[in-house]
Each structure stands twice: as structure tokens, then as C-alpha cells.
Length: 210
Image (cartoon, rainbow, N blue to C red; front, side, top):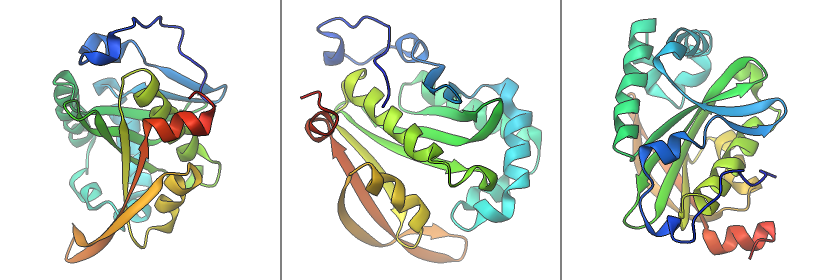
């Protein structure tokens, strides 16, 4: 379970949109001794490119964007674009570090401050699978969103046939809300997607914080 952050929170903090500095202050986020999340910065581009390049075949089935990243420069541009979105407080790009190694990427893919909702996205290098890394990272970000950022609804979308992805929200007891037919285009074909959600009230009941 993610421990409470040391940062004191004002009573009215969740009624306002956090500043970029407030979000920055939450990272690096230590989940367990060997697992932490850091904001991806341009200095991480070589490590990110190496991870993508060594997992290209593994990732390509569900993440067609990997075909666009063929160099450190492309990884650098990816980080820069996402940092610009982060400056607008609508997206937060994080690396998942297992020990000293970059294991994958996790995001607040879109933060809808008006409706207090956020979408989490993630991917992991093949050699890091099977250790519960993504489940722990998603649990930490769900807790952070609800208890620190005042988010009411956390969403995760997965391709219907991507059982490894779907197992993450299911382990965390997210509610499956439905299947969208041919919702996502992956190269030359369309795939169905499954939507999952967790409400703040359900999460607090689950974690004993209600």
C-alpha cells in the first residue's frame, strides 16, 4: 500500500487545480524500496530509447507508436512534447524505475480537472513483467490522484484481447464498465477496448480510508 506523502495538505487544496509545481513536488514517488516513479525528463531520453528499442517487437502488438521512435532524438522529442502538456497540467509522464533500471512508462494520460477524472496509461519492458510492478504503480497513482489531487474518477482503458493489461485494473478491483467496439486502430486493423473505472468512494472503502 502506498504510504501517505509527507507533504501537508491544506483543507481546501483539492477544491483547486494544483499548480505544476505542486504536481512536481510529488515526485519522485517511492512506492517500495525497489520501486519508484520519476517524472521523465530529457536527460532520460537515451535510457528510454534503449528500453523501447530492445522491446520493439514485444510492444508493437499493442503500441503502434513505437514505430515512430527510432532514435534518441525521437525519444527526446516525445519527452519534450509530454512535458509541455504537463506544463498545462493535462498530462503527466512518468518512468517506472525498478532498482536502478527504467522498467517502463506510466502516465496520467489525460487529466480532466473540471470533472475530476484522470486516465492512466502504462507499458512495461518484457523482462520486468510478472513481478507486479505495473499493478503496484497503478495502485500508487490511483491513491495519489484520489488522496492528493482530489480526483473523483480514475480510468484505465485496455484492448479487449490484451489480457495482461486487463489484469491490472481487475486486480485493483476497478469496475468494468463496457466494451467499445473497434475503438482503437492499431496499424491496419481496429480492436475493441474495455473501459475500467475506480471512484474515490470505492477506493477509500477498499483501502479503509472512508
